[in-house]
Structure formats: structure tokens, C-alpha cells
Image (cartoon, rainbow, N blue to C red; front, side, top):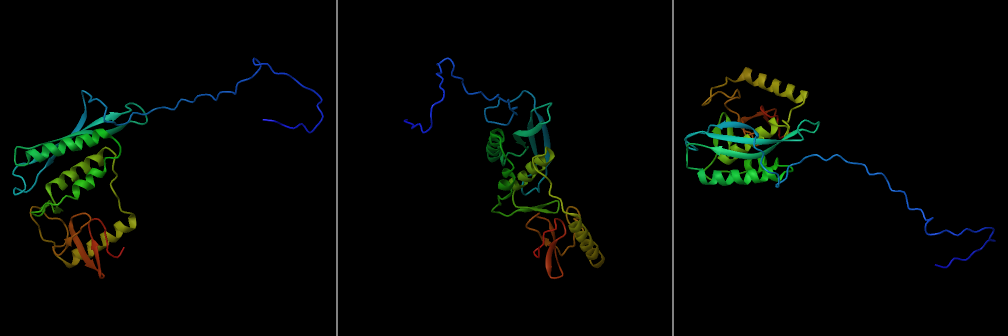
Length: 232
């Protein structure tokens, strides 16, 4: 590139190749790496786990299902120690659902080992509806057996800290308590099978929490269990 000299030359200096200075190199800062779940992770010889007993009505399954979810501990002994689900097993004396249960557990275990946000499994399983119709279990409507397995997985993810239990604020809690007290004074709660739910017998199904706890108060449908209201 040619450059025109506009001013008078008053001094000069010749630089040799040896005198050429290299640009300073920025110091390398080591970033700590944290262990995360990935599908190449080998199975440890020992895993922490929890087993949940799932009792369903006899027309769904004659025998109880035992759901075991094993977790792997990542970054053990550090401030970033976490538990993440690694595999799931479902056992039952009944062989009626054996084939699809084996397939389901293998797929869910593969998703667990893949890592990342696996909480989407809960909603995916809970959105499965039995074409023959759902059932009531402990006062709560369950659309299918697979949906109830999703409820168990949700419970486990809450226990290990991957999901948070949504809590109502103080104003909403006080509002629901007032509603319950007002209805308790007017209606006599009848026992339901197999146990009393504590909600008025005239209550209808809540499509958010699947409990029979929706009443009409002040012209607005309100759930006495989760607080969901059509009026906001």
C-alpha cells in the first residue's frame, strides 16, 4: 500500500525481523466444568432410588403397581450437587399390561439418560386418555393408568428438586378458606367412596387439578382445592 508523506522527515529507524514484537497473549482463565447428564454416561454400580406403590381400582388393574425411579448424583460433594433421574422400573403381579409397561419404562429411561429438561414427560403422560374412560382414585379423577404413572413421576421430580410445587399466595389461601367455611356452614359433607374428600357433594370436576371441588359462588365457578377460577 502506497502512502504519501505530507510532512518533513526528521528521523528514521530500521526495524529488524528479530525486533518485531508479538502481540501479548491474554491469560487463559480456566472455567470449571460441571458434570451433566448425557446418553454416553455409564451406569454406576450403585444408584439412589425411591419406590412408589400405585393402587388402582380393580377394573383397571387387579394388583398394585410398584414404580421404582433410580437417580444418579452429579457433582457429588460440591456446591453444584444434584440428583437426576437415570432409570425407571414398573413391576406388578398382573401380566395384563406387561408389554406396554416394559416398552414405556425403556423409553422413559432413555429420555432420563439423554439429560436436559425431562419434566415435559409429566404433562405428556398426563394428557393420555383411556378410550374406555378414566376412573376416580382417592377423590381425584385420573384419565388413564398412564396418566397416573405421570403423576408418580411428577411427585418424584418434586422430591429431588427438578419441579417446584406451585403454592398459592396468602390472599388466595385466605379466600379459599373463607369459601370452604361458608359452604361447610350451609352444606353437610357426605362421605365418598373410599374416603371423604372434604368438599361439598354438589361440587363438580376441576379440569386443572382433577379434583371434584368446583362450586359456583357469587356467579363464578371456583375450585376449592387449587383455587382455579373462571373469573380470574
